[in-house]
Every structure is written in C-alpha cells, then in structure tokens.
Amino acid sequence: MVMDAANKLGTYIPHFCYHKKLSIAANCRMCLVEVEKAPKPLPACATPVTAGMVVRSNSDKAVKAQKKRDGIFADQPSA
Image (spheres, rainbow, N blue to C red):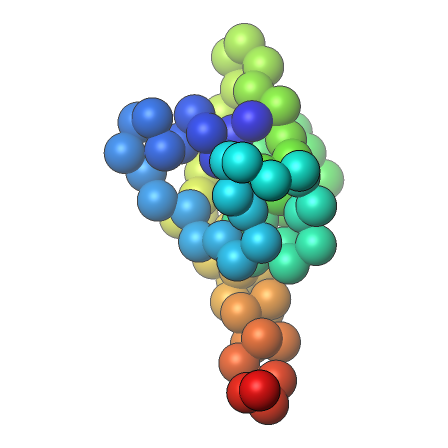
C-alpha cells in the first residue's frame, strides 16, 4: 500500500484508523494523497503501489483533503 511505501521512505502521511496489524478500513480518510492521473485524492492506506506511480502527500490538493477530514474529527466531543 502507498502508506507502507511512504513509511519505508521516511515520508509521514497523517492517519487515524491505519495500523499495519489491523485490517484496512480506510474509514477516516485522513491519509488522502494525490495520485497522478486519479480524479480525486485516494486513501494511502488502501491504495496499492503500482510501477511508475506518482504520489504527492504534501500537494495543495492532498493537504486540503487531509485538513477537511481532520476538521471533522476536531469537531467531535471527547469521551
């Protein structure tokens, strides 16, 4: 997955529900990244790596999508 490849390269992608020992849910959408030729940001935790793939985790499009999802969690009351 893109998330695992990024971690191996030392690139941090924000995430909330991802853990390598759990099944992939991709529910939180905080790990959205821009993938070249994809019409919209994709979840890094659920997107398989392909040869020649170009992924941007810090582009305006990716950061905007990540912040949009982060805001949803920030508005939730704490338990």
